[in-house]
Length: 335
Image 1 (cartoon, one colour):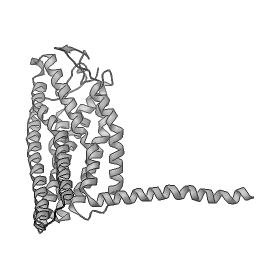
Image 2 (cartoon, rainbow, N blue to C red; image 1 turned 180 degrees about the vertical axis):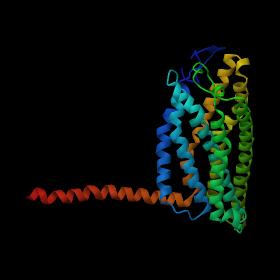
Image 3 (spheres, rainbow, N blue to C red; image 1 turned 60 degrees about the vertical axis):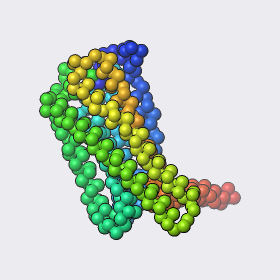
Image 4 (cartoon, one colour; image 1 turned 60 degrees about the horizontal axis):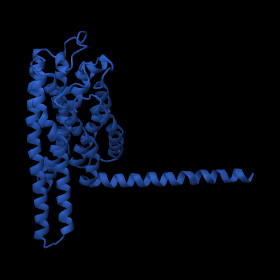
């Protein structure tokens, strides 16, 4: 039996039936969409010059989204009943920890993107935040290093218990010793607080940007209602997508962590309800990897222009190829 499954797959708890196939099915369904969207985003970014700080952050965000996308089917498979015990253990020790670390890398980079846009509009003369490419590259590298080295790597090292006799356990916590459990608990709380701080930064930055731009329209004497509506829509989309994706997971995460740590004293029903809520909210958070590529088009003019240009080139190439083939076959038909 996999490490993260219970011995009874559909226990009834006051009308609630835990079905371990629901969330993996959602994850498998999302994977091809996420792979396609992020593949296109990566394809565009490979042809995009890092001429602005925004593009630097965007490229790192695309790299993080692709990493998460590639791990999705591995985590989904490890959550299915009756699959390999080795896959479940590997997921607990490596795939899940790297996935969570990368998720917070995405959240952090989204925060820096909002700050980047804020300083470019509110303080355009600020060289450090608004226009310094070296600064943005150092920040991006530091985000990867700090989050992987400070969260994923210690969790991998501290999940050091032997899994040989754990075939019937249903939580990754069983792989951790006392130090690992304490570190896991502290990390969850710290990252949860960190998420809400980043959320405040993003909301404040985009609200200030919208107010500044609309004030500029007003000061110039312009009655561009359509422009104001577009600005409001962009701000609403960015903030709404961020909160709708990540907020439910961070509301559920801490209570579920306490259930994990004290599982032996909790009823099966209480734990399974918390587990299902956590898995479903995590899937919702993961859908952000599908949303990000769509937001790039709204937020980055360089990305949008390069995407349109590359699509036109592909369209032209697809039309030229059949024409060249037809011309090549004409002489042969006359012989």
